[in-house]
Image (cartoon, rainbow, N blue to C red; front, side):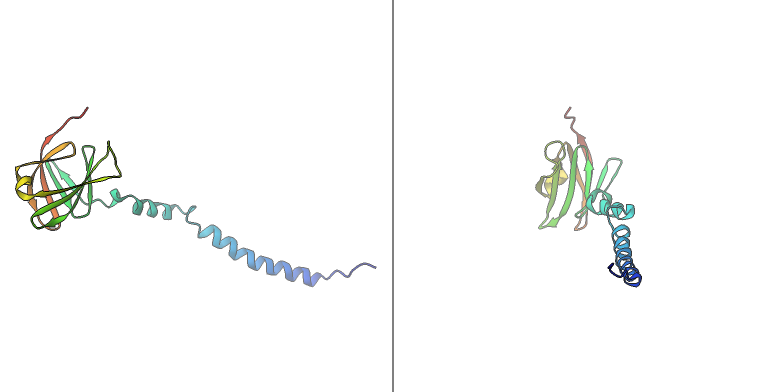
Length: 143
């Protein structure tokens, strides 16, 4: 004797499987961050701080904003602030070690006289708690 084949139970199982698999496939395919180009672009912009750079170079003048970086002449300069008339800067030497910050604490008088940061020499034009302005005084050629 053959077992009785129930078409209704097979159809109900297929309907239940499709109701489970369709949202699962939708959730995986359309919410996967690795296939979404927009999400990859946003992740790239937040991962690389250079896209958020607000510091600029104007002719022979460098304007650094607080906690923003500026890449200049194989060095990255980051202005950390002004406390007790001391200028706090982080200098990354890109040729030597791009991940390590060399901290500099410079008095205003020394900065006005001229200070060497990386491969360049600068003179202070203006400084406050949010902005630092240097004049490019001399560029050293290391090659």
